Length: 213
Image (cartoon, rainbow, N blue to C red; front, side, top):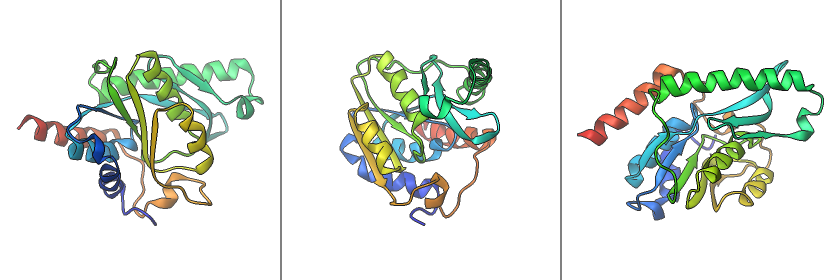
């Protein structure tokens, strides 16, 4: 195991991003796994924090896998290779389901608020790990649509192949570990579990309370 938990991973990632400390950057977490990692980075960098709501497009018979992702602004990435066995009606149904989940998450996790102003800002996109990379691709599309100044993709772990692909899309990539045999994000965490809405809200509340004090 490379990381004890998401907090440990966040602390280590923050150190790798120290060049952005006190530089007025915006940290955008991809919920819900990316929230605790991103909050540790935001605290260390003295940066603004928010959530970019992105949803994987899951296979109908294998929800742990996916054939793409959709961002809250409607930006959508579909992997043509993995989606070729799905008919258009099935894809549309799954996209519509995830659009509804995006609306729910904006309401619950971001209290219905819009994203902060993104134009001309340096934005650091953070997730707790990057496997297929679909969610990060959709997040990058969202930021490009909003004319950000610079996109930094940061994560504790990712596969080497997807890092090479993301380097062509983002302005900078910061990855702590690229295991040779990387199959799932969970494999590099000693303490791994799905984050509930309530836990996500509690993490954000603690951060916000400290910022306001």
